[in-house]
Each structure stands twice: as C-alpha cells, then as structure tokens.
Image 1: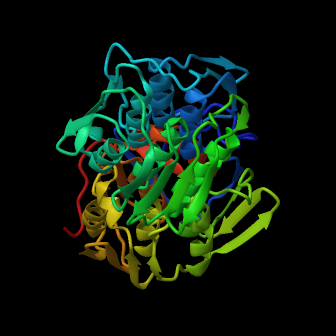
Image 2: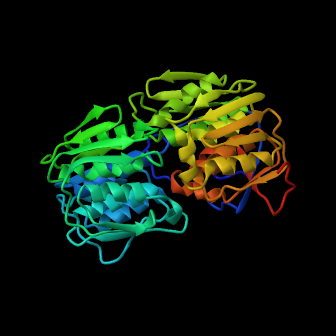
Image 3: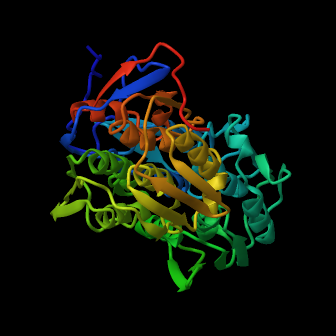
Length: 458
C-alpha cells in the first residue's frame, strides 16, 4: 500500500504555523486517487508578509504582524530586518517588530537573503538608508537573479551602488536618498519598482516613479497599499507611475497578513485537475494580490467557481478546456496554467510571460522540458508556451529545478496522471511548507520512489 503523508490539514486560521511535511523523500510519487475534497485555510501571503516586514523595519515604534507566513522566504526577510536593527520577537504566533525609525543600522556582515528575491531587492533598497551601507548576498540560485535595474534606479536617486554585472551580491554605500524623478526598468521584475517605493518615504524630496515595461502592476499596487497602511503618502500618478511624498514615515501598528492567493491557486489547480472540490476558507474578496485572478481563468477552463463570504471553492470539470490567454498580470501562474493545459485536449497558448525566464529558474524552458517527458507537445515561444494537451502519460520523473512553483504545479498534473515522480518536493518550503500535508488531508496520496523511472518524450 502506498504511504500516506501525515497531514496537518484543515487550518482554521492563516495564523497557524506552517510546518513542513515530515519525512519527505527526495523522490515523491503521487498516487492518483480520484477527485480531491478539501476545505481549509491557505497559508499567509509571502508577498504581503515581506512588504509588511520592510515597512515595519523602518517604522517608528513597534508593529505586530498578525498571522505572518512562516516559510524560508519570510524567515529570510525577517532575519534581514533584524540584521538592519529591527529587533523581532514572537507573541502568540504573531511577530513583533521594533522599527528603526527610518535609521536602519549597517550590519557587520553581509545580509544573507538565502533564495528570496524579494528579500534581496527590498534589503538592497533599505540599505541606502543605513549610515555606512550594507552588502546583500544569498545562495547560488539567488545570485543568478537580476538586480541591475534596481541598482541603476537607486543611483539615479543619489545612492552609491555596486553589483556584479547586474547580479548580486549588491553593495550599497548608505547615506540616504536625494529623491526626484526616476524611471525603473521593470520588464524583468516588478520588485525593482516595489523596492524603490518602499524606501521613498525617507528620501529628501518627493519620489516620482515610472515603472517602464511593467507587466504586472498589481504587485506594485500591493506594495503601495501596504505602504499606505503604515502611514506613507503614496498615490498613483499614471498607468505605471507613483508619487511618494517625504515627511510621512511609517508608523508601527497592528497589521493582519491576508491569505496567499498564489498558494491557494495551487490548491485550486489540484481540484481542477482531478474533478474534485477545494474550498479555501480565508480567501478574502478584497485581496489586491494579482494571483487572486486565477480562479476566473480556471472557470474559463471549465471549472466551477463559487464564493460564500471569505470562502472560495473550485470544482474541476470532467474534461479541462484549452485556453489562449495573456498571463502578463499573473506571471507566477504560468506553471499552474501550463500543467493544466497539458491535461486539456487541444492547443493552449500562454502569452505575455517572458519575465518568467528570470524567476527561480527559466520557467518556460523548464516547463517545456518537463512536460515533454510526459509526451505533451510543447513549443517554447520567447514570451510563453504553446501546449498541445490531452495526451499526458507516465511514467516520468519531473525535475523541479529547485523551484517551489514548479513542484506545486506538477502536483496537480501528478494527481491525474499515474507514474509521475517529482524530484526535490521539499523545495516548497520556500513559500508553502505545509503544501504536501494539506494535499494529504485532501485525500491525495504519495509515496517515496526508490530511483529512476522511464521517461516519455524528450
């Protein structure tokens, strides 16, 4: 009999700690068991947690973050805030952050952002406010993620910044920002613009930011919303432009972290793939997270989506429908949509996500390579994929390339196709440590696989 994961499952609140699945194997084989059924709370948002930590680290006074995400990315940002002088402690599962009053200290050692792109970019910006600067580095995978556009933007605002030919480590001299107009090349990541905005309240003059080539404005809008909640004066000044006034610093406050729409999307995808139903109980309808739009796309693929207050449920159809869709506003979800498209008979076209080539891995190349192992016809485009679905078959061993979103997306595919083995399933701890436990509670089984399996296709 296949081993079943011991699931924590059924969280009643996003503030419950996210614990990684116990005893995860290096190779995990999902055992399709029909439609899944689950009603649970998604984990807290990584995007909101890290933005709130940045604001709290600079704020006057103490902030209580209620229900923060506990994951590698969030812990990296929390440790970085502490290195900059924002002492953190815990109380009843919440995080207490004592802010630096806009005067973060210069750490004695380089700040380790681990594998967190938001931490690396946000802390590089925060370091401009230190008296003697700071260096931000990380693990090998992070050092391949670009930072050059952020470095250039900070220089144009008066900072002295050095990086490694546009990549980390990045060293910032400190001393503050002059302010003024700045154009931030944002085609590679919206985080470049978000990082500049986060420190803009402490510039000596107003910051007027234009995000050039921005494909996903929702994440910058999310940054502005969190900044406003902490007291900053930030307003939209155009389609991809924001103005931040000086003299309105962040102030410590109580701040509740909402659910993670990106994590919930992976749960909904398993329902869509298996014809089951997953209800996420804490999916507040007012969320500004771009990935909250994913259920509507699942409806276009034939799923049934229903809302009752904060509870949002997705029920998968007997047969998924192919789609032709521009994913520019939700680029993280190309992994989810591509794997579901592999199950949908017909041709799907996914466009507008060239930015996905610069995430934890080149996600477009990785998806094309891994889906081909299942016999799925995939044509890689500069900004997306064409997927000819409906023929996926195992056995196959899918590499996650150390990418949490690939691992979670492949879970949906494996829940439908027998014989799929997923490498390094533990990489989900980056943003969703309890992912495999929650799937086990929904009725999805998995077992350790001893080694190599035959590969279909390329």
